[in-house]
Image 1 (cartoon, helix red, strand yellow):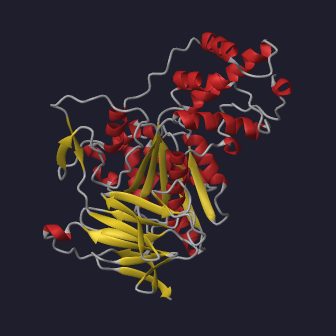
Image 2 (cartoon, rainbow, N blue to C red):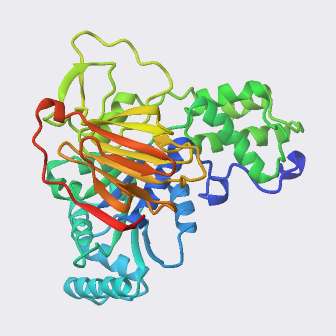
Image 3 (tube, rainbow, N blue to C red):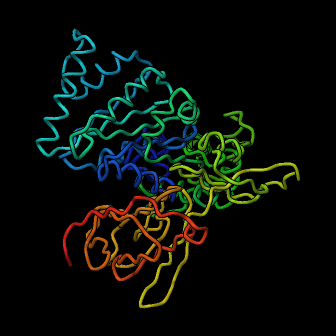
Length: 444
């Protein structure tokens, strides 16, 4: 092979989901953070979707690799199963041999196992890849499993991962009960042009390039045009390019070897998937309690669905008859430090994560802030701030809290910063909801 020619230790563009080669783009880092949140919280489950080759499986493998030893994992990859076979497969993952069990016995065994793990202080995680292939009957079993709980906590954490068809299933009326249990959805889109460059260089560095530029500068833009930023396609094209350079006995990939690879693969330029199609797949039909605005405004769903990142290219000018939907602004947060406001953000239904690293919605670059410090969960009738198991915690009126329902004018201490909540509904004559609970950890 070409390893000796390019002075590499490993093949850089293999298609296998090797966590060592994972490139954490901003959205991949965010999706990973949301999967990690299933370990912190047990209220509902997380859905991660992405186009074929977007890197979902590699992301899952990396996430699983980093879990603590107190997490018991069942990972399901074969999803074309009957309801009973699915439940048996889950038990197999937990070390049982349930093939002669009837469904009632399977459920009883699973329930007993989950209670035992909870009593022993262990967390149990069920992660289902290729979940778009699950039948509605099996998805109903998933819903029932998500309801297993003690008086305080759910006993099973669940992550569903799959192609965009999974969102289409979840948006159907047949699965409305299951969809209400979904705490968070996130859709992985393709890499941007700049991320494509960084992705290629990252994989070469992991393979042993030691900073050497193996791909000529003028090849990156062409690679992006033919792959659309889809990681699996990038891997295929780059590996073929290196093979072409190897046959030419050239120790770098230039425009000639790139064109030879494209001819060999018989590829045409990647057309991509329209942003409107992606948004429809993730958000589903527009909710009834939103207002109509002209196309070009930011469209966000009115539930806990996280909208996909906007495409890098500017959208085409819409016709005057076209309309889209935008969720109501529920409130605003002001971020202040030393008495000075440094940032202001509107709050619409969904989640907003605050932390130290760039993959957060609000980044606070401070040693007093954890990587993912806290999150604000906004619904039409309530807004809640939750600590994400941070080192220094969050404080309301000098009391460290785990969870606090925000009221107009509340100030939350986050490290050396203050987050002030302004309820926009108050100015519209809103009647305060019955959400005033605060979960206190300790006193300052």
